[in-house]
Length: 352
Image (tube, rainbow, N blue to C red; front, side, top):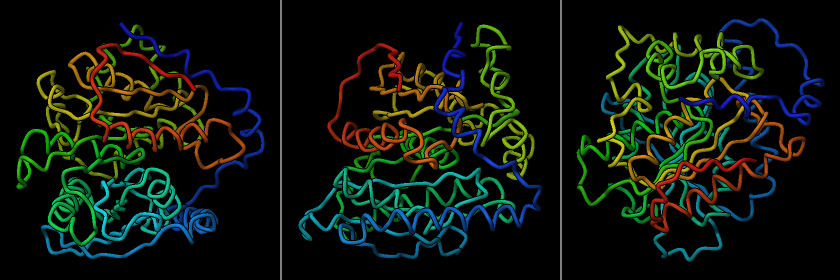
């Protein structure tokens, strides 16, 4: 039985940051969405000052299966030869399936493109409350098929594709990697996803969580209980985000909805996986249990825990020292997957 509660004790550095935060205002869904996206885009614009001369970007339109035109943007390091086929990293943003825009990810994607020397493809999948399950999942798969077909246009290598994302985006990436490993997508078997980088991942629909709780030593030490009222993401907001997906009769065996509830057989087929998990986060345990399952089934797995900080802590930048480790974890995760690592067979948690 597992007990990961030691990671959930708020760090002194976080408590100092938290003391400076203003109480959250009550807002309608539309107002909450607007202000969150405006804030994210403002932060991205500031961050792009560092990368404006080191990365080139191009916008693309991807046709979804229902005819909807998905916004995507590619980022390529200027230092790379224009004719070199670089590895491709597909990025799915976080935001509870409700927040996020194409431009809100510019700084993140540029940093990864430059520091990991890859072509980054940023996918602006559709959001709640306007679009419900499984629209975002369909969009992720359709974008992956487009990348496989259009890799030459991107000067990217279709045989070296890594997928990843943050929070809800990590959920989409994990579901996509599982579908690809099970040959459920209409692409050549040779175009396998060769790695995934999952940061503060949501991997299990809340109402399908019972089997996860059974693996925890005691309900009182589960991340759902310990971090029920955590800042940034608490259980009330997690349930709000899940509810807006409007999943009818959620089924624990729906592996698209619950990539964290995969079988041992399915786990063996997954590619090298890097996990970045916040300790003071309701999502902590599902990320760690996923990493444990992959490790036990022969998947090269790199598990990182950022102790004592909440979900979404990266937004606080230089105010939290672990933010540098967050960036390094993502960059190293991409490079590590591309290096075709061997499995260690040990569930080793790297603490930051």
